Length: 218
Image 1: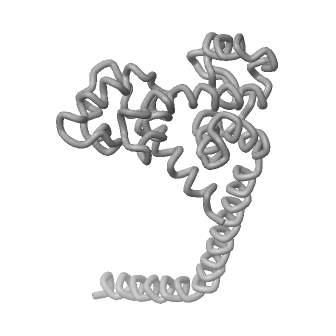
Image 2: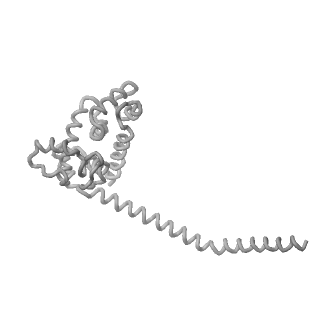
Image 3: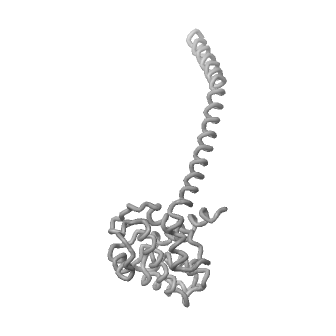
């Protein structure tokens, strides 16, 4: 008994100390919870500021060339969302394959476009990079005019910008064997389409959609 009693006393003492520590820690935990909530609020505010920044950068240029090449009825914010998906609106962006600028155009593609537009300046200049990207989009937009429904064309336009019209043409051919000529059908058959980094393209289109939804909010 003389050996057991001190051990029991020690255990009881430890439990009492632990309870006291928990009680003492409650104000600190509450303080940390308050700080966490404040941190979340600050993060949400930062996200709101970032969204506002996205919605305002280069707006006049996107408006100008969207209207020039697509007409006033087309929502220029689609192209702003595309620019964000391409480079996060970074005019100095360069990809590992050599694409450059805000709209991530290959130098050869830009040269072909600019050769018919003497007013276009250097590829890295944001205005001309945006203009060339939207002009390239117009060719792709026309490409799908008779193939897919009008409300689906922008998906195919952007997908072709990312993966090439030949690849998306093969994807659509496979898609129409299982469903209507819509983007959802392409998503369904994408893994079975050869010679296509489909995950990149599907993610690209989804990012444009989600960014556009943010930009379109009043």
